[in-house]
Length: 249
Ligand SMILES: C[S@@+](CC[C@H](N)C(=O)[O-])C[C@H]1O[C@@H](n2cnc3c(N)ncnc32)[C@H](O)[C@@H]1O
Image 1 (cartoon, protein in one colour):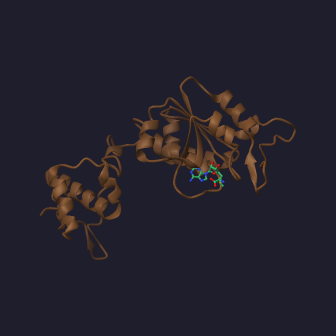
Image 2 (tube, protein in one colour):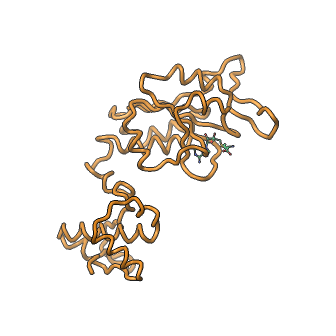
């Protein structure tokens, strides 16, 4: 997969994609992430990329010409052009999984007061928002999308199936995780995790995930796939029951 991030501030983006898991995935050729300087596609001696908005109102807006020129130069057959925008479709794990099916993503980072509307309407295939808050630019949203999509690509994460066990993958939040020491400042690792009984551990994890999701993100339960026993557990939580240490009744 190829991901182009088009930005006025490549210096904000390049160090992030060069580090850690993204950097390794790039070096190993699992993903081809390119950082593209929007100014390279602006015309004139001053390579201007923004201008005042028509109709008044403070702040500058990104001009359409450089963004159209950049996308027209980068686009490959089957490329999907995404404009980062707080008014866009909400980015979720499901959207990240959907985007792994695209061979080439072109992520456009807005700046200032935003982007000329003709980019969203006539150039981008869609607008994506990473949440209901406003950032100073689209670089962080583009990186969020690139990161979430890349780590789902085959071979990028070390342990096979690691992504499948994480929050949202099964429709629930991830259960608690522990490492050594077994006791830290009086807090002990739940005994079931030390038991070596894989069936018990799997059940404990599933019920913990169910309980955490019920407490913190009950909205996720509307779409999660639950069996009859798990639905009964939800009713028990509603009645005030909590899970014992080993996750069993
Ligand atoms: C300061 S914001 C513009 C906000 C715009 N005036 C509005 O009220 O919707 C500048 C750029 O940052 C990016 N941006 C900011 N917040 C974002 C979010 N939550 N999701 C995606 N992109 C965002 C977009 O590319 C946007 O064009």
